[in-house]
Amino acid sequence: MQPGQQRRILKPLYACAEMFSTHHSTPHPHTAYYAPPQAAYCSGTHVAEVEVDYMTGGVKILKYTVAHDSGRIINPLIVDGQVQGGVAHGIGNALLEWMQYDENAQPLTTTFADYLLPLATDVPTCAIVHVETVNPFNPLGVKGAGEGGTIPASAAVIAAIENALAPFDVHFAETPLTPERIVAALRTAGAYRTLFAA
Image 1: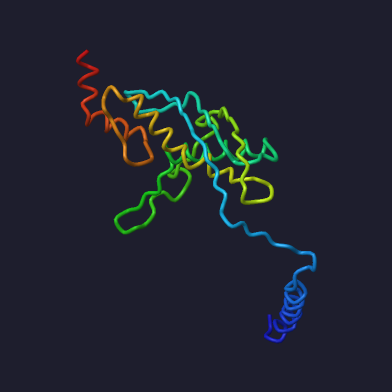
Image 2: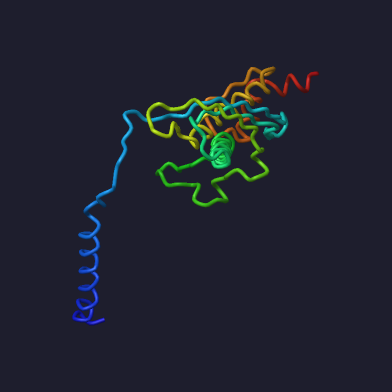
């Protein structure tokens, strides 16, 4: 492309962009904005029931229950999907997802072969109970939905794993709880000596 040709092509593009930004920079006369005085956070509680294989460190989630308050629910199916998706994300955080780096801060988990995500078989269908506490800070009375599924999920799964391993007094302070980490914690706690002595 010759320099003159480039100028002929770009000049109409610049004119079009300028016309678009000028035309759309003035809001429509009937445009209104709403900014709530306070953010509306959802709340809830999660209960996970898990099975842990002592020998392999494998974790199977048997049942997962969520009581969730996202304010007034306008479309229950969408809110259920937000909560279920959030739980899937939280289960991934608890058991699989781990961004690893080498000593030079270069990522080691660069593909989905290394950075594991939960499969449909890893995430049970949640029993979801909606609690509707209307939010007074916005006209619809709604609150957030997705983050209420994600944030507590890791803690619920890890607490359930610790509960399953309570006879061995095993506790965890980091995620993900890979099978290797669970077996290492059981070994450190002397669980295998206890199991094989019986």
